[in-house]
Image (cartoon, rainbow, N blue to C red):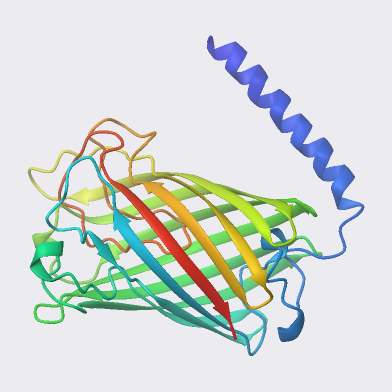
Amino acid sequence: MKPNAILRLVVACAAVLLASAQTARAQLDEGAGTRYAKDSYPTQELVRQPLTLSRGLIELGVPVRFEISKTNDGRVPDWSIPASLDFGVADDLQVGVVHSTGLCFGGNGSDCGKVYDDVGGRVRLGILRSGPAGQLALEARAHVFDFTDTVWTGAVGLLYKYTLGPNLAILADADWTTFLNKRSDVAFTDAIAGALGLQVQIFPGLAAFGNVGVDVPFNENAGFDRRVAGPVSAGVEVTPVHNVTLGADVKFSNLVGEDNGTSSGYLPLERFPRARDIVTDNRGRGDERFLSVYARLFL
């Protein structure tokens, strides 16, 4: 397809999306910009959920992540449980504990040196709400790997979500990660990542979502060949009862980027992202894949 034809197609799709948004906006009275009471948080409507939890609400995430890559990476667990726990301190402030690998019970036979060897914390602050539909939030994270010989990373990012109507929401994220110590021991010390996401509410209690991103390392050390990765993920969620959501997603660390792009394992907007602990190899497009099944419990 010629570049002019691609541009016309993009403009046409954008025009259709904007027209749909104008129609849906008139009908929208709740969405990502709405402040919900704890008991009325829209657990069964993904597109209406804000970026921050309601005051007093707890979200416990219990995923089981499986590596389904073409080649079995000895540094990536075959399966693990990177659980998370977030608490709504206020409607625009939540704090949480997260993991990159989390619990790994397979031992060395499952590419796990220890049962538990990483933990992180995050703070998410809502800084702007645009009516009932949109919210802008700032997130800061810190993560520690290898409790014996600790490696620390820090990150900061901006997230935006806009609910276009009762069945559609768009998301965007830009994120910067840096190594806080042992900077001479890693392939690169800093990376920026961005992502666009879409959420579709099929009907109350059932939603689908997808994210596509770009992942760019910089400040690389000698001998590292920098390539840009294009991570992609997609999944579904079902909420059979008000406070329990079940989901599954598949993630490719580099599906649409440069061949042999850097596989960092991180994708902004992903429900349970891995932190940047695996950064030393360039890989073929689509090599690194993960399947996650999870539960989100609202308490």
